[in-house]
Length: 430
Image 1 (cartoon, one colour):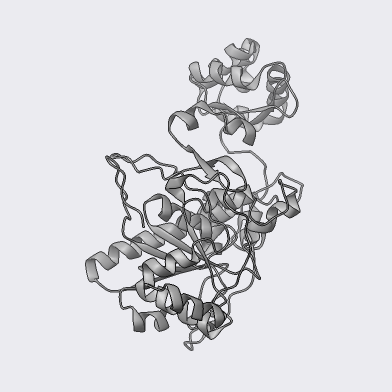
Image 2 (image 1 turned 90 degrees about the vertical axis):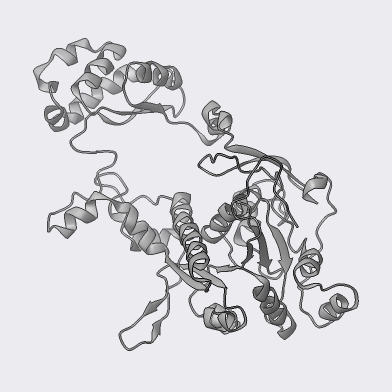
């Protein structure tokens, strides 16, 4: 169904992924596999579309149809979609047949749901001894001392962000905790993808299948940092403290010229401090004993920040960024998402890639956050329409065509959804 481009390497070429994930964390993980060359087939439900397919309705992003969501296109680019009715015996049978041909089966359902559908690890292992089953959920599959499995609690990113400890360290002093939003899901997805790659590596060594069980709560706890270390040593933690990073000062975002324009500055030593003062015209501060070392600047940071903010307020954030970086001061303008799309560094490294979607048209989507030599290919294919590749996948994976395909349709194996005829799709992605 796909072949490596000349001069490029597809790390996972030949690996088939049957993808039952939806929303954020699961699809972003399988998107990484897709960009590494795996053939990812997304199993969808027309009666219960992926949350990201309908998010544009809530956010008022473009047309209201389920095929026009840019966020869905971003984290599902290059995948193929089939629509199965897993409530029907015929639909479940097709899922089992596909799993027999798959290398990896992924889901982000609550523990026990795949087993209830007849698609759990032990069930699939019986028909495919090399299968790798991978699940990510809020708390993961918990086995109690008596051997019984404890049901996972339902929860989206705001819930497992709080349960994993993120809410205890994110926010300003005296205010309510601040939810970290999308990166919470994406962080869980990165660990999930790492687990899948680990299982594939183990299978190469042993020849046997494996199970990957990823807890989104644990991925948050892994990222909380030094606060967990302090608590483990019996020390008190400071809780919410905004951008403070003791003993570094200044370490914060400061206002710049323009509407909602900011620059982040983090000074780690006295040389950087003096360079910052020189650039901002604050030589008097550099000579003042109150600010002569990091510990003193940290102790008096509230007063210090007022002087710095007064100086940065009249400066363009990107011009100031370049000046401070040239002087050896760690600093970065706080770019808006629209500005990131035009960022020269991201563009020159090839992070932004262009897809051509039949409804959305041309759209830039994010790629992998690393560069590999020899290079990875760029397929340029957009996210799939719902069920777009049902007949194609069944023919390629199972040899199902013609009369058998018609029989399966009559048995209710597929949920149908009428999607518009392609208008922009490139031939290479058809």
